[in-house]
Image 1 (tube, helix red, strand yellow):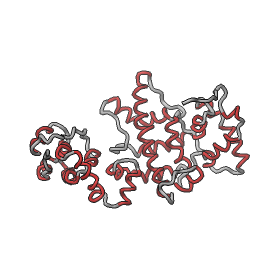
Image 2 (cartoon, rainbow, N blue to C red):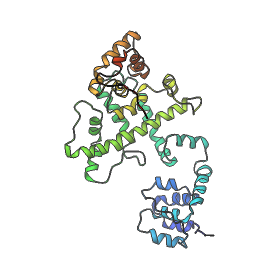
Image 3 (cartoon, rainbow, N blue to C red):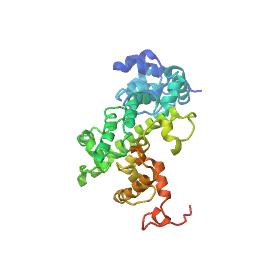
Length: 335
């Protein structure tokens, strides 16, 4: 039967650097390797399964050139199966003993240590969403400003914030991220990339706006639903979404707008339902919806103009020939 080296916390303490010493020593003992990964820039090294390393001094010498070698020590010092057992027990018993806190942090969709940091930003993101109750009636510039304020909350945030490579070009993109946001969201007078810069612009918006900003907003909205729903396992529905989350409909549309590259929820809806092939064609159909809404509701509120239930209600009134844009074809599909 193979034997594995045990962790000597004194050696771990000696090898730890700076203010992370106590934290890494504690997580080494507890086996909470995920927290060490998330709180450091170290890339995970292969776990030593053969037990060939006799003591921590040899482990330290072997991995000394690697940044954050203390994490490598923790990884190498524990056998694979025992590491997961200790990690699971440590999360529940030592690091996050409060069950309500664990549930809240995991519901963000991040590792607990990232969720704990995200929690400080989540309240500010939610406040921005709540303040966007008039999103349905404001112009493109004001709509763009909402996304700018939310995006600014992710600047400099490790683990869930905007991230680029340490190259001059990528750093310049990060510094000018508001212009890239305007381009991505089709805002009027937005800057346009040169052909040679198009790929780097696309990479930035895909990684940081569509993904990271979208995930952050989605996590806040999901948490709002979970807090308001009597049963947190109950799936969201359009009929109960607004009353349950206590958020304006902008919270429902925010992530979809990032995906569809538009500031107008109606445009995103029309594209997703096949009512138009381009954003321009979708925008031209908005007067049809607004006329239907005015005939349906005497005095529409700002949120009524972007209520997805109203969008669906208007779509149901369209004749079959108009429900799908001219030129599109419908036929059976065999999977």
